[in-house]
Image (cartoon, rainbow, N blue to C red):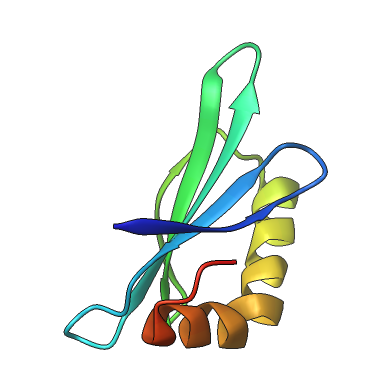
Length: 85
């Protein structure tokens, strides 16, 4: 199950999973795009492993990587406690 975390000013949605049995949390980022439909990427916390990246240019992905780093402590807390933001 995925839980909403935040909608950014460019309509990018950031959602996260509950805490997995292996101690990881999946963070999914998705941005609507008129040409391509959606761009998306997955980051696994707490090891910050990125995968399934589609449509983002390097500068966009760098922005989202910084966002995840700054918000990881909250996302992990919410995933652990099952809180919805």
